Picture 1 (cartoon, rainbow, N blue to C red):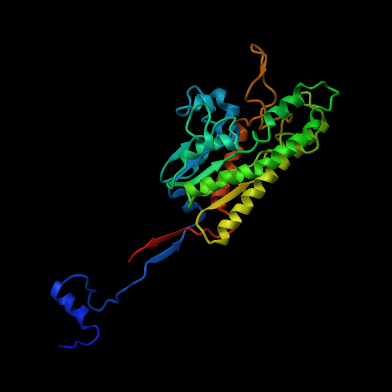
Picture 2: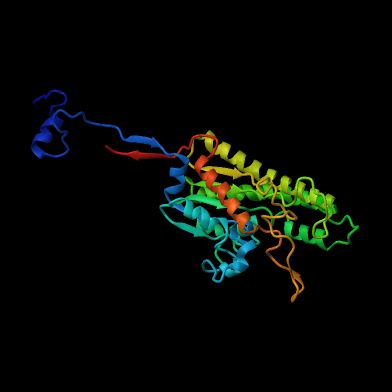
Length: 324
């Protein structure tokens, strides 16, 4: 039996097989290089997927489009004047852009689908690096709320009398919002998810009636919008804290748009929200009513592009590993 010194066998194998041997004078076993990605790098690595309701689809400017954006856009009122195409042009997304926000969407419909189309959530997969959405307004019933405020008798308190019902629906929204975030996380665990809030529709201190709504009515609607934003924002903040606590990749970020239209609310000289539009032929309220104008969607684009650049208020835990 022949005993060889430790380390001789690997050397002998290298000499005989001429394979897997380190070059002379070079250290073996060099470690891979690990680089923490910036928020912008994380967002741009894959596909940008835009989900949500009418405030993301472009309802307020849909009537200006001559041709739908993509399949099903004529039902969902996806418009080129939404903030989504503007965000898509502001950054180069490695996987392109998928635009599937749909007017009227609730959190449940985000998961189950509308108009016989695939659920929006199924458009998200591991290739997604950035997801944007606005959601919750339809869960809170804001379309019906505004309608009730507009069609009431001038001296009626029917508008503010909806407070308890709105508060109940906003309370139920929290659990559904959490379900949406969990599902997004499962489908794209390394993505940044940016949730956009809703703007205050009326001036902070209304001075006159607008569309049959008194100053008191307007203040109440403003307060209900604030309550909705706070509910969504708190769920988003709690979820992102959990991601950070585990040192996991990706993020969930909230963009508070409540004061974004200050000076440009309904009733102002240059509003960023459409006021009441009535289709006189069919005698019904036009869907673009109380949805952003082109200027409003451009303002949303500014908020989101700024958030993409800034990232969450913490380091990202997405890393690039390169081997030597």
